[in-house]
Every structure is written in structure tokens, then in C-alpha cells.
Image (cartoon, rainbow, N blue to C red; front, top):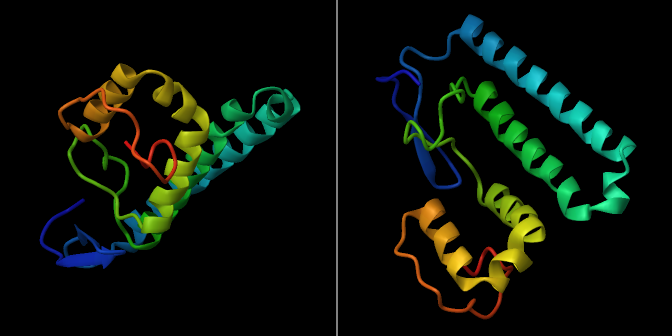
Length: 151
């Protein structure tokens, strides 16, 4: 993202807007990229179903939901002229997300990994530390909520 353009907010999360407004050419490039991402995601989803993954290994199919949600978040960024390409843990910069995005991602991750994480408190603590940088602990899950929401 470029600096100096003010800030915006979605769902309580703020981010820096591009300086001088959104360049229509740059925004078109972002939109074209996210359209390609969406096409790849749709093809991947189709490939999973043609391979019988939906009926064979349900949790494996859930990865498509993660991919689709990421594409949706990128689509919103592109529409707002936000350069999403380098917004990740490696740069320390976050994409603007809404609560429902995180709820959906938590649901998918819990479906895929929830029982695995609950089965091994040390593994759960390691994941918590990797995701949130918190001190790992081996305490059992809290009551209520999905497996990953409890972490």
C-alpha cells in the first residue's frame, strides 16, 4: 500500500488508503489479478469434486472454503483500491476483514483441524503460539465455541 492517503475502516479495522486516491489503472490491475485468483479457486473446487473428495475426505474439501474466503477478502480490497498482494505476516500488514470473515475461517479451520488440536494439548499450544505469538500452554480447551475459537 502506498502512504499518505488517509485511512479507512471496515468492521473496526483500519488501514491506510492509497495516496492521492485510487489510480484507476492500478485498481484495474488488482481487479484482473483477483479475477484470475477466483478462476483458479473455482477450478480447484471443481477438481476436488471431480476427484470425489467431498464424499471421501470432507475436511480436505474445506480447504476450498479457505481459498474462496481469501479471494473474497482480496476482491473487497481491490474494489477499494487496496493493494492486497503483500498484506500478510511476512510484511506485518493486514488486510481489512470483517467479523464474519474470521468466523467463517474459524469454522473451516475447526472442521479441518479442531479434533486434531484438541487431541494433543502441546500441539494446540504450539499452534496458538505460531498464530498469535502467545506463550504456549498445554491447558485443555475452554468450554463453548468451536475448537479453534477456544484456543
